[in-house]
Length: 164
Image 1: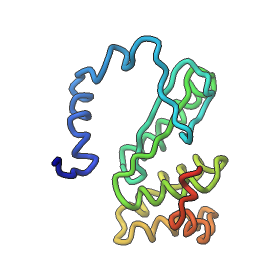
Image 2: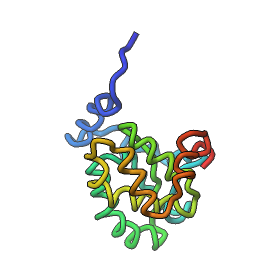
Image 3: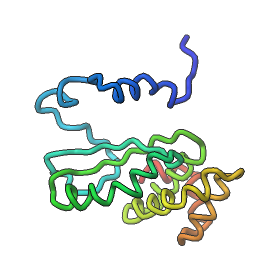
């Protein structure tokens, strides 16, 4: 029976292959004519009918993910998403408990607020990610951004985030 390994360890060989330039699949990343799979509740920016799709798997506690979100996403949006050249799909890939809880709150905060909540979480990452009580620090950030504690509690205590 295989033993459990953390997600980062399981993905180590994939990251190595990507960095080393080893193809991860067929040329171009997909079989000819294949469209990326669409998940029922995935969060996206840009037109769903755009000819290109950028898919990001991201963890809210990952500093590299925060750098991309805070420094690169705006340029991607203005150069490709706003022009209908590509659509951006964001998929949560929580690597720790606090990132998972933060993703749950972002999802159940409402479709119109999802990326706004992600902005707040990523921009404030240095304030909460290294804290001794990271979840408590993140809750404070979310409250300061206008989310009610009752919403935060309801999101993590129920399955409401699964429907978002």
